[in-house]
Image (tube, rainbow, N blue to C red; front, side, top):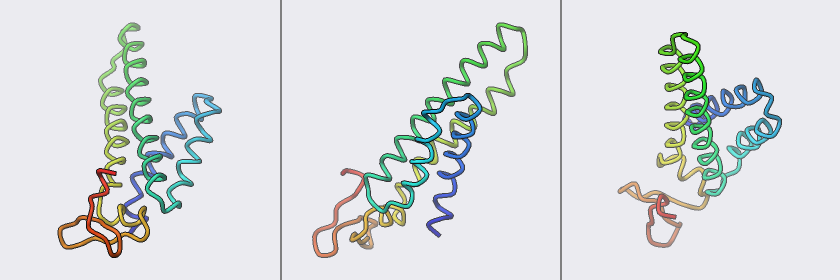
Length: 134
């Protein structure tokens, strides 16, 4: 089930990595590989790093969208399909960062934590705290 919940994250990172690879960005491609490997690290900081990478990826998709749409408009080419596709990819990437807020993934990336009936996550013997505020 964890792998299924992480699938949007993996797809977003792979598509972003392909984008950087096609653009010849030799710095960003290894960073994407690091982000993918962090999905196996069961710590909150690892989830936050991946979330940050996804949000930066969203910014990159929007930057590419604006740059390419502007170029197409200047050359008199239609840009609607490009805007829809890249806008959808940017939205998917941004929404992928939200999967880390599900109870199951909050528990996965915070070993030693438990969820009570209210959906709050706390330590195994302490009071419940919501991990979103950490």
